[in-house]
Image (tube, rainbow, N blue to C red; front, side, top):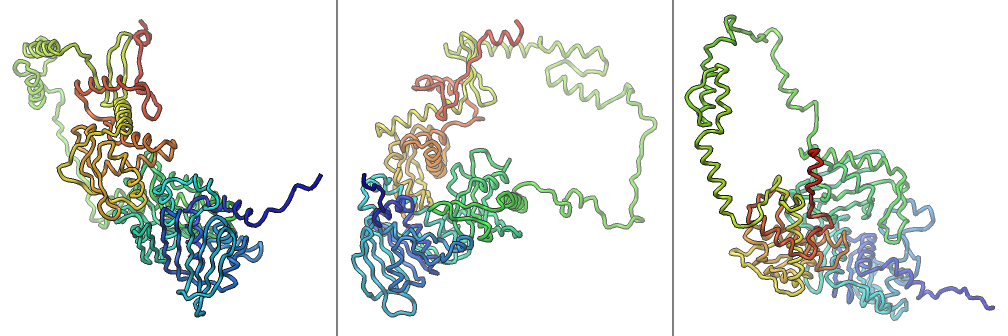
Length: 617
């Protein structure tokens, strides 16, 4: 039998490696931006067409490459950052594995122009599916320009698995934001289909965060800074009142490399204990500077996972630093014995000789049991008058019996009669009661029924909005004054992808300038409640991301859930008899009235037998 094991051709091996390194256009963007940073560029441009499927171009003014280096960079395991195995534990650069350019060249058509600062001519290289097409001298500006065209053109199965353009563009913006945030001293710009999305000048970290997420973030940031023998920590955290229900604004950087670490994330969340609800997540942008010998970044091809030598110590430092920053800026209470107002108020600057002790005086003839007590008589008279009793009450014990005769008062009897007449006029409709403005109590034949009013209204609205998304017939109520809402570029791309479905719900929305939408109407289903259109729309987008992220729902289902949660009545809302009856009628008209949209019970019944047992009958 002949041998069956053989070496794979380089082109096939590169395509296999590309499956790990380049999972979508955003992966290629990340690798190219990091290479530009490693080249020492202080100005980087990113140009994208068709969400990266047609074109990804990165232009930088870095050091450039020689003719030999330009050709060598497309070979597998070719890198300028590692010479020997020990270098893996002293890495300060973004890239080091030597896989990215070879992987990209295996699944795309690549044009590269590069020139070093001390050379007059640069080098042009064209490569397609790992095959070199052209290499020649070219006049070009200093630095490097790389064009990636038709990504996954030779792997159609992978191309078919890509999401819609808005979804892929959101991933590209995520990667762009992470690299731009890690290097605020570098100027960045991003263009998509000829439209400028970002133009970021070189700035300090706080200004870079504001430029990326919006001017309203300026007031949300709290600085964090800590220097220890293990790590140096700096960055910003968000004020608790601006926390969101999605995890999209949590950023950890270790030696300027973006990482994902649930363990360190838990340290930050613990610092916010009792300041945030369980389903809210704070903003943070934190940079950890650590000796490269104490970490291992060669864990995963995407380089977003790191192993630490002193993990528990880093956790403790991070938690205490965030906690102290929250306290220092009066976000959470602290006890500082040097500045505590309660103790400083006790301190006096007078000498002991000047301090006069307080004098105490009393009336030796005071008799608390004396019969003449004008204040007590006045109090009893006021109490009696309030409840319709007779004249003044003397402090004698014989008059206490008159308190129990109030029920015989004529005015109270007339008032009781009037209530009974009103009850008789109410039509044959269930008499409902609200418990703590959270639950609705109704009598049934077998006992009583408890209904969670918020969960019930969410269920009603969810099924109604889902129906509107299917039949596209959601009615709109025009706003007297249209409102504008400015979103982050990522949320704006998401909103544009959902615009048709949002209009189906009953919103009247149109695009208005850069990252801005105009809301001209809201769904009629929201009733006459006084909604803030801008906040409602922002919460709708936020809730959609949360539903899709946690439950992996389809687009319409996630949108209906988000809309129902944000527009339903909340616990603590006072409801009248008619409102409670209407809500219960609508609930039992639903397909699934017994369960909320999160799968929890809406209705609980307590049988009469169970109540009898409680009273031992």
